[in-house]
Length: 281
Image (cartoon, rainbow, N blue to C red):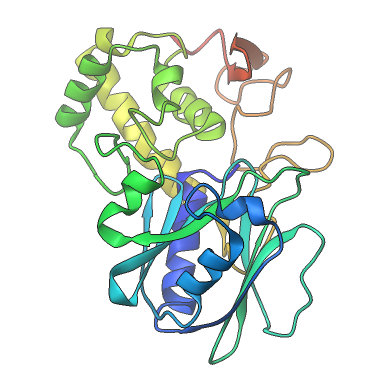
């Protein structure tokens, strides 16, 4: 799953490679990816073809490519989507659901290995783009909003939720999912079930610093998203977690801080957390 760090790297790549280009051809191979923002595939194709990309933005894990005439191309990577660059003549792979080529060459392929893809895309009015994509206007983007640690502390106190569930709840925080929520909490030395409203000043500052350090480190590890279609694979084919991850996917392995085994705990249906029972309080 692409989370905020990888999507920010992707946004920067798109800013360099796509902004200023005009869309030539649009081929939607899986009609479901353009719903619910469009009634059908032809409506989406008509809305995107011929448009010039003027800016590349991001909100949480959502990519927003602003086009001319006041509209925005919204791309939601979903659970396992990837967006990568190809030549205009490259044949789409079996897992490619959308190809978009440009008048001066090159193309983007939106892919996902899934029988029923979770990726979604559409073209909407720029001023209503976040609303149309279902993003809460009050949710915090830890990179873009850049709150002070004191503002962050007030936010945590007002939310009053267990830390893990707060970090992955898009009604409160956008772009942080199962991977980096665990990494942030491990770095801060705080348990997943620690109530956000009971954090001490020192704990708020540790958590605040951890969010910054983990996001920056993950962005460095991501490399170039457009050149590597597999950038979102944080666990390899053998189940080994990526080198920059300290707890996610490492259950049974020694904690790199205290050497106790990392534990995987089920919080609720479909939600798990990786943590150390010794050094996270």
